[in-house]
Amino acid sequence: MKTINKLTVFLIMAVALVGAFASCKKDDLSNGGKPRINYVRVTTPTSADSLLVGAGQGQLIAIIGENLGGAKSMWFNNQPASLNPTYITNTSILVAVPTPIPTEINNKLKIYFENGDSLLYDFEVQIAKPRLNNMLSEYVNTGDVATIRGDFFYAPLTVTFTGGAVGELVSVEDKTLRVRVPAGAQPGSITVKTNFGETKSDFWFRDNRNIFLSSDPYTGWWNSSYVIAPASVGPSDPATISGNYIRFKKPIGAWSWNELAGGPASAMGAISKSVPDAAILKPEDYNLKFEVNTIKPYSANMLKINVGLQAEDNDAYQWKPPYDTKGQWQTVVIPFEEIVASYKVKPTVNPNGYWTRLLFHGPGDLDADISLDNFRVVPKVSK
Image (cartoon, rainbow, N blue to C red):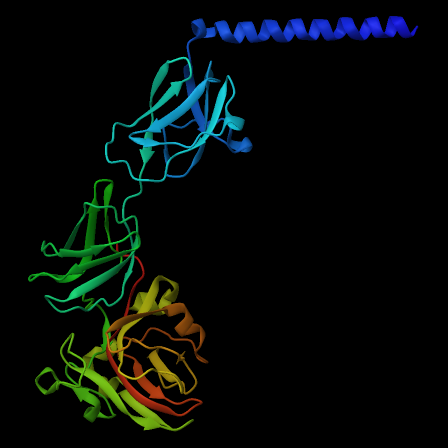
């Protein structure tokens, strides 16, 4: 009985080996034994039927074909891919698209094989166009250097300001672009263009939309003495970036009451009507922005900001420390829905204008030297 069982097992194994050999011979003979790519697809099992004609940098792809087992190297444009023998079979190759930027673009992938064969296949490496997140400061004077933050800043590139003026590139890194502001740069979006596309910013350079507090000219109830005009800027003052600005420079104690600017609509004038109705109705679509310059660190106390209200809210919105620009102008961006969520009474549309106030009132003594300008409520996305 044992002998019969052994014989049965032997026969089964023999049949299996013959089948496997026949299968291998069949594979070897497909397409005359020549390598061929049938298609490229994603590697996610649930999306295996999603075929690709291109892929982004670093994306893992599956190359499906015939007689691929002898692959020894692969190139996308003029960049080599990293091949792992574990992921190479006769019918498939798993490989990640190279992340370095190609210097020559032919939208081809090429595979070299151990027997000297090679295979060329149409495939596009989809390199991302520039992404523009924000500016270190949206207000920069002509001739000074503006810093744009984002991604995919691949040289060569150009930076064009609204009005058509092109900036001089100072430095280009992967996530930071520095450009000298040209004469003729106008308020509006900035466009960055590379060999792989161009992007127009949602943020505005020198954004002059919907400004509800700027001191140009001064209006309101409190402290016109804090306003610095361009003609009065001295060697120890921050440079003016947009006409007048507010400079609050004095020691203050914890929980002391220090109003910087603002007042009711009747005292603020036409600027009190600058907050858009759409921002009151859909605050999630808007940001509060302003420029700040700290000669001394904003390290204690608290700045309370009222905007878009019918009357003051003594507890909101709380812009808390720390914040230190080290003597440079920077743009602060706060989602407007966070401002609205902090109020006891929610804003409602008022065609007659809104209450405005900047108030230092909070915990901790502060030796304050902080400058502020261009308070505005602007769309998050340009249309």
